[in-house]
Length: 249
Image (tube, rainbow, N blue to C red; front, side, top):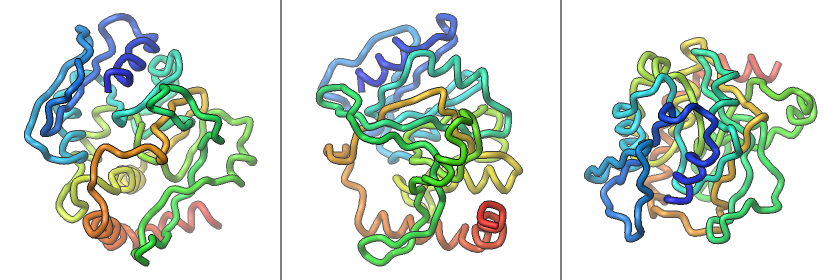
C-alpha cells in the first residue's frame, strides 16, 4: 500500500494540496510503516469489506472528483491532470490497464487491456456472471482514438465527479451483492440507466497487481457466486432489452 500511495503522490501534476488520498484501513492494522504526508488521510474502521470501504472513502472525501484505486497500483506521470482535462459530469472513466509485479514493483511485459466488452459468461461452477472481457475488434476499430466509450472495466481504477456518485450511484449496496464483487457492474448499469457513459481514456495508464500474485482477501467461492447471481437477477433484463441492442446491432 505505501508504494501505491507514493505512486499517486509522486505522479500527481495537480497544484500541491489539490490531491487528497484517503486510505481506508478496513478492519486491520498493517504491519508496515504507513507513508506520512499532509495529502494523505488514514481512516480506521471495523471490517465492512471492499464495498463498505469504498462507500466510507467517498463519504469522507472532500474533492469535486473521486477516484478509486486497488491496494497494489502504479500510475503514470500526470494521471490526475490528464484525466481531469477530459471528463464530463456524467462519465465514469477508466484507463489503459497494465500488469504489475508488486514484489519488484515493475510493469510486466504483458499485453495491456483497453476496451472491454460486457458479456454474461459462465464460471467454473457453472454460475452465470457479468464479465468485462477484452474487446479486440473495438481496439482495432478505435486504435487511433484516445477517449471513447467502453462497456466494462475491471473496477481496480475509475474516476468520476462526486456529484454523479451522490446523485446516481448513491452507495455500493452490500445486500445481495455481498461485500467484494460486481461493484463495477452496479456502477456501470446505474450510470447507463441515468443517461451517463462508461469511458476509456488511453492517454493514461495504470498497472494493477497481476493475478498470479496472491490476493489480499479470501472472499470467494459460494460468497462470490451469490454476488454474481444477484447481479444477474437485478440487471439481466435491462442488459438484454437496452444494452445489447445499443452495442450489438
